[in-house]
Image 1 (cartoon, rainbow, N blue to C red):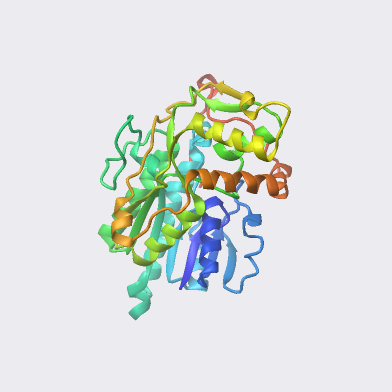
Image 2: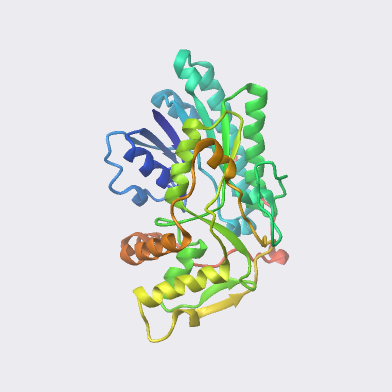
Length: 359
C-alpha cells in the first residue's frame, strides 16, 4: 500500500511515517515545512526506499493535484494542520486557511483522483482525516467524549478542526468519497515541537528557568503516547468502516499540575540540580477559553478493531523525558532556526487587528 501522508514532517505525522515504513508500507510525505515541521524527525528513515518527500501546500490545488497524479497513492492520511491553541488565539487566520481551506482543497482533489481510478484500486481508496477531541468542547469532573458527543469547540483551533471534520463528513455523504475520521486526545512523546506543555517543562527544568503552569493547574487531559496513536491511525486506515468516526485515547487522565510535578520528579533523578525542579513551578495567567477537562471513551475502536494503548503515562513520560535529555541536537536545532520560547495565547484586544485568510 502506498499512503500519501499530509503533514508527515510534523510531530504526529512523522510518527505515522516512521511506523508505516517500519511495517513495509510505501509513504509519500507531503508537507509545506512550516515552523513546526522538521525533517530531522525522520532522520534515519528518509533513506528508506519506500519513502518519498514532496514539498507542497495543501491549500494550493496544483500542488495537491500534482502529488496525486505523480505518486498514485492508495490512500491519504490527512494530518497537516495548524495545531497549537495558543497560536490560534494570537493569529486565527492561519488556522482557518490551513485547517478548513486546506482540507477542502484535499477533498476536492481526492474526489477528482478517485473518479479516475478503476477496479480494485478504486474500491480500496480511503481518505483518513485525523482530528482532535477538542472539537467536543469541555467536560465537567465526570463523563467522557464518545463519537456521538455534540461538537462545542471553544478555541479558534478547535473550531477550525470542527469545520474540517464537517467538511469530510459532507464529502463522504454527498459525493460518496470513502472517508473515515479519528479524534484523538493529547499526544506526547519524542519529536514534539517545544511549544507544547511537556517539552516546555522539560527544557525549562533542564535550564533552571521558571516552569509556567496556566491558571491553577487543575485542567485535566487524557495523555496518549504518540507511537500508540500512530499504531491506531494505521489500523483505522486499514480496517475502519467507511463513514465512521473513531475516538482514540490513552486511558491516562492527569491534571496539568500533576503531570508537571511528575516531570520534575523525573528530572530530579535524570538531571539533578542543587534544589528540586518543582521549586521552579510558577502559576501564570490562564489562557482565554481554557477547557477544564478532556477525556475520551475509546471503547469503540477497542471493540471494533481490537486496539488499546500499550504505553502507560508513567512509562511514556519517562521515555519522553529521557529522549529530550539525550537529543539536544534536535531541539537546539529548532532554537537555532529562531524559535524563542515566547509565550503566546494572551492577546491584547486593544491592539488586535482583523486579518483575512491568505489567498
